[in-house]
Length: 148
Image 1 (cartoon, rainbow, N blue to C red):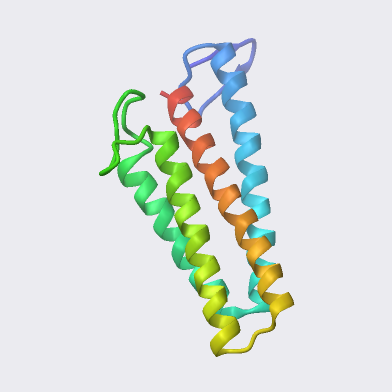
Image 2: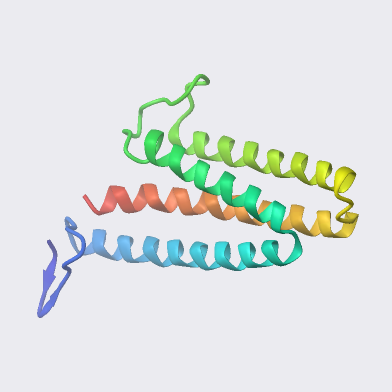
């Protein structure tokens, strides 16, 4: 635990002051991604509740996979069938999720007639959501590294 003057960090045990400063920066980035996710999800539910449910399913699924397979493996370990590095695995799964959003929106336009402009807006929001999921997951890796 890092102790400086009368300041004590209780929630995390960190190795040094520099690790604490890095941890603080990563937590700030993590919080900004959480805010971005919340705003994006609110916009999605306003435009189309079905897409919102699908996005929530994908985001939760991504996080469950990342916790199970990515966050707690070593830096040099390879993951999955393609033997990807953990950051590559996060990028690929986020990209596959975005493609699933695209396919779902294409079906929504064809079947439910949600409108092309709504679908384009939701596609842009979906891209923003999965970029945020990707950055959030990368920050989690750094927090796990610095909080040990």
